[in-house]
Amino acid sequence: MIENIPNSAQFDHSAKASFFAGWNELMHLLADFEISFPPDEDGVDSWKDEREDYYQSCQAEFQNIISFTAQANELALKSRVCEVSPYLLILGNEPKFKITQEDLDFTDFRTIDAVDLPAVVNTVSNNRLPIEFHQRYSKIRKLRNRIIHQGAAGIGFKPNELILLLTAQYADLWPQKRFLNDWFEYISSTRFSFFHDGKWSSAGMELVEMLDVFFSALTSSQIESLTGYPKNKRRYVCLRCFSDEAIENAGGHPSSFRTAYLLNQTTLHCHLCDEQFAVNRLDCPEDDCKGNVLGTTEQHQGVCHTCGLP
Figure 1 (spheres, rainbow, N blue to C red):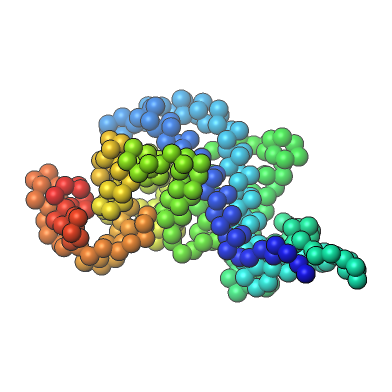
Figure 2: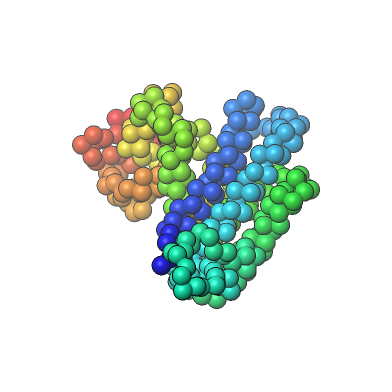
């Protein structure tokens, strides 16, 4: 018999882990610079030269991000093939069978070459991918191969180019608009989660450092491709996530952790915890707040989803 036969869910989980290993690194790189070189209050960028020098020092990390993305692409395509049949992965590479042969391990089989995966997916799967995906897939794979075979990609990477590649690939591979939830689950599963005590350390505390950069660095169309909403769509505080992740204990303000959108006039949907909450459309009692979305749960009755105050 054949042992250790993979399934679609295993490949999909590993694909997202690889993708967000690269994505999380990219957002940390951007956030680290913004923390050390904050923008001027008038919005003028006074750090252009410093930013360019910083990006040059990040080239090794950028190359690692490309490698993670290439691996995520291949694993995600294998997941789609497995939805039809895992045995399609060894198409054309079947082993020689013998009467006295012992059990076979699927991991010992040679699988389809990475270059052939897009064509196989679009042949056997109902979830076909657009031609633009295949073009990006090929570009990322060639860059990764240069890094492996030559030690360098041969080009200088820029963050906005990587953001464009990664957001487009994610949107094509996982069009369910669960980006923030997937990102949060990844952070919750890394080695740092061992230290998350839920009071002074949490996955939310790590994410809050990158959320502002995420919403400022991406274009409106990129944000919409990942969340389903444009960049200028008003976001609200998920009071449950803010509380459960102990953001306030780390000095965070509710306005820095807005991860929820209104589904309709009386329902809020948090893209981080993927929960929905009934809300009241009443003006916030705080004079300086123009919010009009108040909590209805027992724990957060009357608390404003804009400023986070009762």
